[in-house]
Image (tube, rainbow, N blue to C red):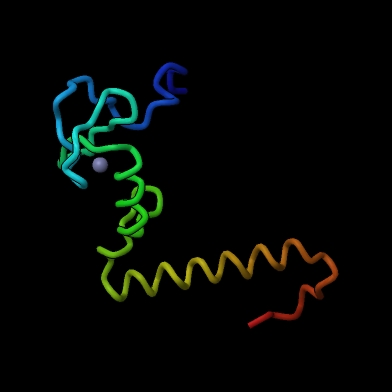
Length: 99
Ligand SMILES: [Zn+2]
């Protein structure tokens, strides 16, 4: 188990006052600033907009997947959805495959 004190902090907070956001180039102030690994300081909002644009899920940037990997991921998601649908519908006959 991880110590409780680090559980609420995902990224180190910027402590310097004169750094500029790597996305919008405006100064980043202490509160609301984050350090993006390998990129630099950023506003939390700018970083979140960037993450949305980059289509990341957890730590995976799906725009960096190959076509085959993306296809595999899609199959996994569909299989998981099918599985959950089956489990949440107890009336279904177990012998019938829903494909
Ligand atoms: Zn910014």
